[in-house]
Amino acid sequence: MHINLRRAIALFFLLIFAIGTPILLFYASGYRYNVKKNAVEKTGALVLETKPSRASILLNNESVNENTPARLKNIIPDKYNVKLEKEGYYTWEKDLEIKSQEATFAEDIILFKKAEPESIIDSEINWLSFSPTNAFAVFSTSDFDQDYLYLLDLNNQKFNLIYNNNKKFVNPQAIWSHDDLMLYFQSNGDQMIFPIQFPKNSFDLTKFFSVKEARNYKWNQQNNQNLFAQVDNSILELDITTKKFKNIFSINPTEKLIDFFIQNDDVYYIFNIGNKTFLGKATLEDNTLQKTLELRNDNYHFNGIYNDKIAIFDNKLSTIYLINQEIDNIYFQKDNIMNLDFHPEKNLLLLQTHQDLSYLDLNEGKANERNVTRYSTGLSQASWHNSTNYVINLQNKNINIIELDDRDHHFTISLPYENITNFNTNNDSEIVYFVQDDYLYSLEIK
Image (cartoon, rainbow, N blue to C red):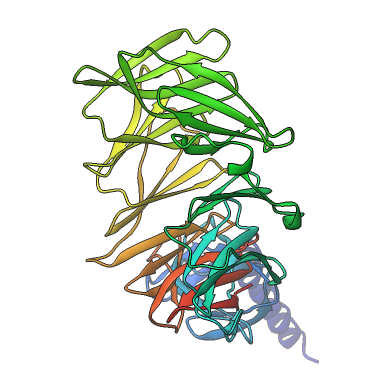
């Protein structure tokens, strides 16, 4: 081979090396040519994680041949339509922006199962009450002109008849202990106590405690064997084990006790003096009034204590107030509230009106209300999904599952079932229970 030809070949490869090496180095470092911007820029990454895993990933309707969980690297910065698909589940979809030298995360994604509802019982449901932690429910049915009370385990869908007094229930009321293990049920003058794990050990409270003026029953938050009741201006504590009661708190005869809430050794109570109404705090040990806060009217009641905030409800104005336990500061207030739902693990309080869903993070020192969604009308019920990244609501008798991540939009699944009047999930949010046309169904969603 002629020496000039050999020199030309060597020069050619030197040129390829000189030109190609920087390009390869740029490529290996994550740089790509962006056609839209007509420029070279560093790429970004997309991190995806789902429950359940192994969902197919599509970017702009093109498969990337990877399944979740995944970290997709070297993506040219742009806005992408991201779809996650898995057979038997609803498709998740959202437009996400990939930025240069940054990772975009979508890690708390739940893929909800497509399933068919299953009937719980062949009879129509007259009345239904879910327990506080969604482990159980009680419901009533009718047959031969009398009502029957059933206990339903929301985790295994088994139910048992626990009560029948050979007549129709009149204004039934259920009061659950905070841990779901005790139930006070009232109807037709009977006041039944049910130990949930041993419902056959139930008894009628009126046989041991026959004070007709007793009302406003509440379970002790620290001991599910004790039940409080209000009699005129006094609070009695009933020991379910011994079937005995004692007076633990009283106010002056010149005052009027409206409502109360007991937390540890403190009693919070709403009372009247003349034409004024107050929220007071006292100790059970000596009944000494420590602090008061004047209220606008005499139509308040306690909703509970969430984290370290006392919730009282103004029935006239449908206003909720969150007040610190020293009752010297109103943390938050909001009008037109229909329901609250508290997630105790994350200290998140869901607020529902006829139109709006929002929530508060009670870990924050200052209240910061975050909006979830707004409807023109018809919002009647809402609760947290166990993950707290989703809220489930009932709007215009349809169930919707809404993701809180508001990038692009709140991803929403509307379940294809109509005329639903009540719903709840079990405590793991794996099953939705709902009443449709007066029949009770279960629907697996996870």
